[in-house]
Length: 526
Image (cartoon, rainbow, N blue to C red; front, top):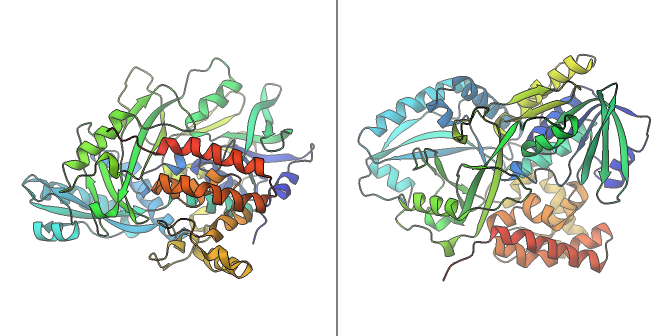
């Protein structure tokens, strides 16, 4: 197994004369994908992330690997075709995390069955050989049996179509591990504080190790700005008077118990009051409901769900379920920001702003990649590295990621066992229990996660904080925020021993985690 010890990884950057081919700033889907593409082509690659991998947008998605049915409705055929192709590759290359999910559109108008069946047949055809299955119209009887809990009044039937579902931050961690296997160096908790220039051209970055406080000057032939909603912060360091490139749009999700809609199928609500689609998706034994599209004028690492967004999601889903979730039923609520290309001439409708990615090369040679979505991360990375070769004069090398297996990739995993997300690592993780029997015990009585997963996260998945573990290595914070808060002291204790930290570190970690976790709890008004 590849070495993920922080001390060893930091050693790789201590030589002041070393010149990297590529430094990637940002450890979300796009940054990790770009680092993997560059490393797999043989370039000396370094990735720096200011907090944890996938801490921002990349852990807060609707957990779908999809072509985007609504982009089809907008006539964006090219984007849909590209995303469907990438969806097919992801199912092959990360089979343990990506699965074929059936979605049902309930029909409450007599004409909608035929309308959506025709539209989704085009969607299937665009996927070609990588199709996940054919769309079809189903009767009212079949719709109600497959969606227990769906409102039956005025229901005519449903349309079934297939798309992908995955665990976003788990995929990010596996991408980081794959980067290491391909020879890249990836570091979390490393903040880029400035850009190095020679003759007004980018020559590297200055970066601070947030754990040791040490500052490094790192030379590179190319620097890639893949910081998502934060791209303008780095662009400002390059050109202080540059107009903002990105406009943030917030999407929220609420998580409730699966008893509100038991079964394996997801619901897609094609038309909501704000013109977006809304999904109700089974995920890790719970129901994930979202999302919204709220333009914001600022961005932060911990976005908070707004009251009007919560009301919108609750109100909309309440129109489709016989037992509508109430505020007291919400187990967790999370918000994420999308980096959308800023509208240049006053258009405020973020759902109409393009989701296709954009590459910008500054006069200094700084390369910025923005936009896009999880499904197309690999293609975005390929385009970015192709651009790097062109602009930084690297020795040309062909892309290899189409068939590159991602760490953990394993077909036919048992999804009834929550450890399926570890794929080919599962047996090694379970072997930890031989080291200490108690590591086989549950972290919390309401959740399936075990103590061994915390040890594994520290030893093999570069987890450095309690939040890293409870939010992104295991998904407890996203599934049941109260359970996560209850579990934090135990996780802090396990981590302190592994990382050789003292009691003060434990206390500070618990306090930090509780402060973050409050944002995932809904205040119930009496």
